Image (cartoon, rainbow, N blue to C red; front, top):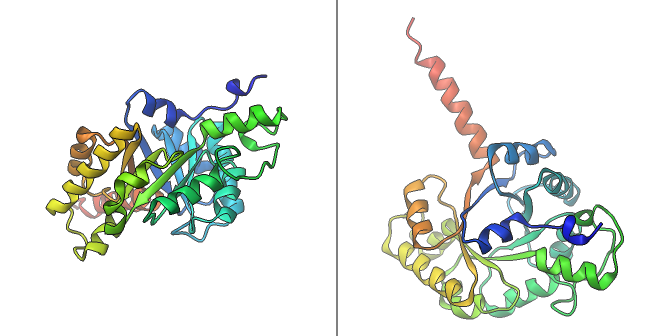
Amino acid sequence: MAIRDILRNNVKEKLKRDEVVASMTVRLIRTVEIARIARTAGFDTLYVDIEHSSFSLDTCGQICMAALEAGIAPFVRVPANTPDYVSRVLDGGALGVIAPHIRSADEAKAVVSAAKFPPLGERSNAGGLPHLHFRSFPAAEACAALNDATMVVVQFESAAALDRAEEIVAVDGVDMVLLGLNDLLADWGIPGEYDHPRVREAYAKTIAACRKRGKHCGVGGLATRPDLVAEFVKMGARYVSTGTDLAFLLSACAARAQQVKEIKL
């Protein structure tokens, strides 16, 4: 069986076709069922958030492998942009890494180096990865295919990142920028002000930088503002982080409880 028959990243494929990608964040549910639920719900991808959860690397890997089998691309947001996290979540089954709090081109280059095999990076070749169904392939063939399928997503969550947007986006191996709006607003000193003019300016600047380099821009932190999500997608963003499993569950539970409370006796 050829690698191309096993290894594919539907997110990369959709982005190449200029389609919008829908993502959900996993930070509550620790079992593999969440991958099938995400697929059944219609998501293109999920990302396991180990920056803001107590998930172990083992739990993270199990969910990633389940997502691979379900046919959606698993990404992981790491708690630190270091090789011991980046390479290990990728070895565990992730097809992409989301690197938070990137502030410079050098920081972005370090993530690419940890995520990509030589000659693009310095990731160590473990062999027998779940992405390839634990099959053995010639190292050169496997590394090239995995490099192509693996995405590096950097997050802009500070004014410093926006100031260096052009140089960060230009880093070879960076595929997408995800704007982490809540942290960005906090950094500006205007937390929660989603309608502030600086928000639109940030998206316009980031989308322009991404288009110039053939990269992509993602929307994050706007689960409560679908109107703004639609606006930024029309501007050119092509990846939407829709919200967390926790928020989805709580919202549905609250709605059902309210239905019962509103029954008139």
